[in-house]
Length: 58
Length: 361
Image 1 (tube, each protein chain N blue to C red):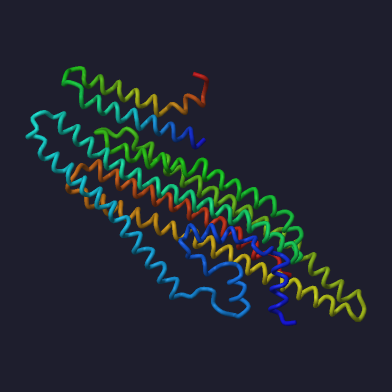
Image 2 (image 1 turned 90 degrees about the vertical axis):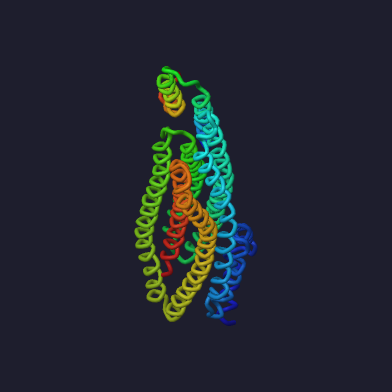
């Protein structure tokens, strides 16, 4: 239980740090807001990972 | 043969010498020797001499030195964080002269990461302290409860002793496992999430961190309410049935046995009173140990939380509001950690008080 929780938090931590680095390094373009949306979706998926694992075998 | 000798002999019969040494050692390690004056032997001695078990001057002095020491240790941390905050504020103002926006962004991010690193490192120590404190409390209860219940049975509360024994030991072990496996790790996760939040412009995990924190505190509160309720009500009912048993036994001894019956009943009552004195002494030892084991880490935790809050307040004018919000949340998380520990200690102290309140004829 505790190990799973720590792994989950580590995942969230790493994904947020790496995505914010990407966001800074991205060139200014019209695609930026769509990319931000995609990043948010990725973070959402990582946050919901335990729920997905609990509800079914995905 | 005076009563002191009788009491000491009975004490050695019920509590094997050395059985509580491991508790005292563990507590002394955690509280840096503050529990040395409260071992079982010393409490027995002061009770027999009719003295107060607390020497107030010494207690106040040791707490004062503890608080001052902790404030000094935590102040270093606060100043480190504050210096980095000043640097980030400077970077933000200088960012126009860097030309490119991404350069200043990355430097800000690195500074924020350093703040996160320092905070996580100090939080890990705090978290280990909380785990140690909970472990010591659970160990103390696991050793003391069988002793107390044994004494309770020898005061004549047979029903209480036999019914309470599995309920209580199960509850204590279960509480320890739930706290160490679920609630405290959830608090750890909540704190880390609160810290990550200062990295990003948008709030990604702010609500998640608050949810985890509130859920952890709520579950502990619920645990306290349910378990203490069950134990108290159970104690009342079994105590009533035991009182009936003892009074019937005393009455029939003095009435149905001719001539010596009165003396026998008096002797039985004396024995029961003696046993309940021993029970009080062991219970007081348990409560004092639990109180010190919770108090010393709690003071450390609250001092660290206070330093975080002060740092957050001081950092607000010079740097990003994100960073000061995160530091403030971190302080709240540590306060919640302290609240969870306090609830646990309260639950265990209620257990001991219920056992102390039961029986005694």
